[in-house]
Image (cartoon, rainbow, N blue to C red; front, side, top):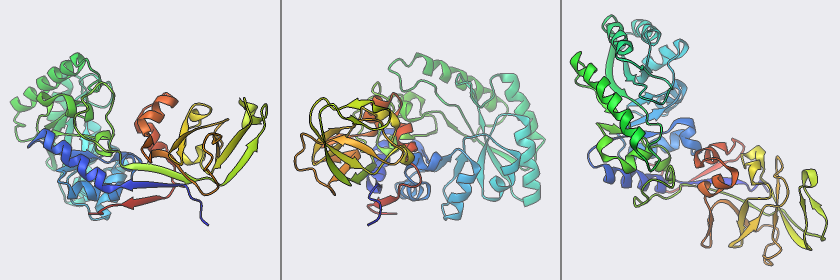
Length: 374
């Protein structure tokens, strides 16, 4: 029998999440963020669902991701929101992947690639309004970019954007300060003749909470996969997690009071116990931070993790789950008989965020796609 540790992706949940978000934002365009293998859910499979659900565009973080989508037949507009590299400029232009630009060297590389391919290079100008990542920080820097664009006949500016640093916080003061800076830069672009461009700024937090900051397009990420970016944003838009992680018990054994469990003897049985062995560990992306703190769900009941999570296995306390036996279903992320452990709950246990929990699932865990594929 093959190893039973599997990630199931409910594509219909992603489709419905997108439709719920689109209903919330009305006629505003939506760019679905599918970077980082669609937040661990599968790049091409999710991109097809986004297209089917009515997304206007897709967002990636590396040109290679965009190329993979083009090779899979995805024809939506694609924006690479990550850094622009000379080595990938040719592929970007050849495959019609819009690049983020923030300095003159980006433009020079893209213009050279456009000349060689005989195609136009499309770009969005990135404004750093307070995140201190990629982007131009001042009007002078923006004017330098504009001057360089005018010297590049094969480059077409189709958009401008920024990224909010704290839109998932209840206090939106900094978000609105960023918006003021962005608006000022947009006025410069308009003054310089760039009037027919797509303006965008909102990630999931602002999509949910800031209707006044939608501009022409929004860029939800974690929300399309079924999670709110924090507890401080509105939760009245229905979002359903799309991924569940499951395995099965491989062995059940009895442990006497005082016996230690796992590496480092970090857990010592306070009583006679029954322990279930589960074939999943940090080699599969199941966080070691769950050691002695996390839980899984077995036979519809919570089973605490005992001892340190190993590379390939973990041990769970099934003392109070008498019907747990080898072969029993183990839910690591998801819901079983009304009892759940979702990625954001695991994130709280591991002192991280749901994004990292989902992205951590390693390539050796096979994905099974459920629901309508396209």
